[in-house]
Length: 142
Image 1 (cartoon, rainbow, N blue to C red):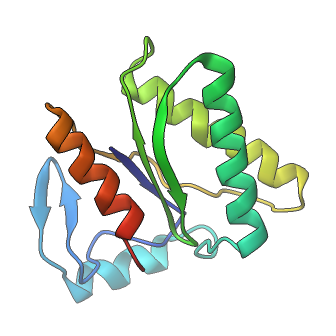
Image 2 (image 1 turned 90 degrees about the horizontal axis):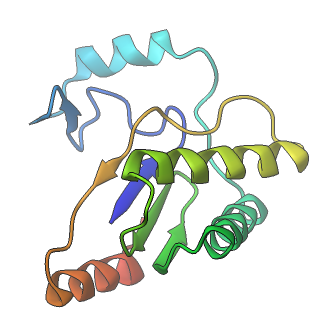
């Protein structure tokens, strides 16, 4: 399971917690404010139309490269994707999806940076794990 966020939507210091150097840290108002001030552009929230574009582009690209997607849900501030392993590394897969969706959104009028650096990954070591991740994504609400 892979999750990545839109630019500025989950900054270090966020009250939901954040990851730094591999450790999950609790929210910190001072850290959050400092990071808000450092943002180079506005926080990105995808419109309903933009979410549709991102979803369609990911599925089309996955089909093109033979990557089996179990479930993909695009929210205004993040993407959840559960997929089977692929010949490319997970870093290459995420980079590919971020790149093709960015170009597609630019073609539809969106400007500037869209995604944050990095992503979260959760591996599924059994069919039960996989089923649980799929259900989580399908039932996830923002």
